[in-house]
Image (cartoon, helix red, strand yellow):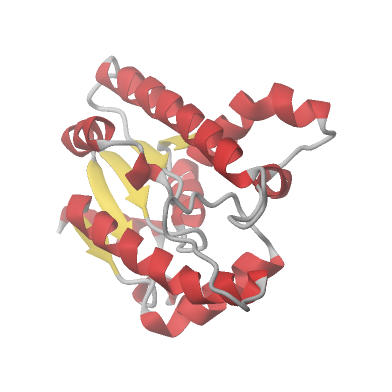
Length: 206
């Protein structure tokens, strides 16, 4: 079984991919793999870890964001191609989980179609009730987020006001894209009820 987990940051992708890894799955953690690709650039700045990757990328209102977010996306495309190539050569009896980033939907139709052909794409949803919490978590503990063309700043708005207004638009856009490629959709709240790894796997087989 080859599974690709998609969804926003803090939707539970890394949590479940590590649970599956503990259950014998081969795990590809895209965040970590991109961070390794960025290693030389981060090292020059004394940066290390996902929080520092977020600092390096910057917020969409910061000067470095556009250039650095495109660099990040280029590396993401590279590692997705590497993963898909590895899977193609792998023993079909192996169990694999791909912990994608929230920005995987920006990697292009070719990569996403190959991902769909090579794996069961599982979308971990983020219901309206937790969107505010997700935004608060994003502000407190920023992760690298590719904003594309969603962010804009109106006259008189502060940076945080613009971010707060545009974040739900980002979620809405991404949700449509996740739904477009998902083979299975799992409910965020349902997965928070002490679900075992075996039960999680059973959801994918039912």
